Length: 329
Ligand code: ADP
Ligand code: TRP
Image (tube, rainbow, N blue to C red):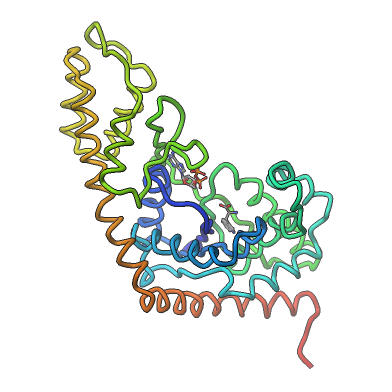
């Protein structure tokens, strides 16, 4: 069985794009592979978050992922800083990571532009820590978005370099986990492109019914088709794509027929779309609230997650220390 590992940012709330594009696939994947999910709180320290907010961010991220269906009985779910073995592996791997390659990393160069007054060594070593997250479990698959592909490539380089330097076949070279057919793109409601945090067009899993209705009613439309079966402008196509994702098939076909007959009333379509979105989001939002207010449950989940993760991590660290020549007296 493959070992799959996914690192979760502790900042930002999940939107429908994350849910349908990634999370729903994770929920399925956890039954098909040996899965590790962790909240990357060490990594978030590179931007110097307010210490008062850090814990809340971690708690929110964890609650959202659990509410969306990650199951601690099935997968290993933990907080990165509860597994300090990762930090030691990162230190050991850093001896084989070159400053030249680290300083050329795209994400590092982006950060230099974004936070010129805080170019700390943690930012430079970000890919080494990420490699340690992956290699500590000797994971073979990592689901990553486009912006993380270079980091995964660097992980393979560090792993291969380690294997070659010590003449061992120890670390597997992790590949990206591709959801293939199941991967869908959720467009934004603002007429073009994808739904995203940075795009500012997200419908979030924590949005109230009222907020969802407002966001959907504001979605960009036009004056409607003038001839039957006209091709759709992007904004309209996006609305239909979202409807296809969140609404029952007959609702989607009902409005598609209306469009093709030039009888579409976008107001009606949006009202329906908002209600269908609410049907998806409201139960998740309620679970998020329940989980977030249940400290005892959260404590149990992360303690058990850290315990399971440590079994693997201790074994890897012991073997890596030995390979590198660190041995007990
Ligand atoms: P954002 O674009 O909001 O910053 P992230 O980069 O944090 O989102 O996204 C994490 C993962 O969620 C991505 O790797 C991708 O799998 C998924 N994802 C994000 N936005 C979308 C979207 N609009 N459609 C489909 N999947 C998405
Ligand atoms: N850097 C990833 C992100 O920003 C989060 C992350 C940290 C990660 N460690 C990881 C992802 C290990 C996959 C594997 O999204």
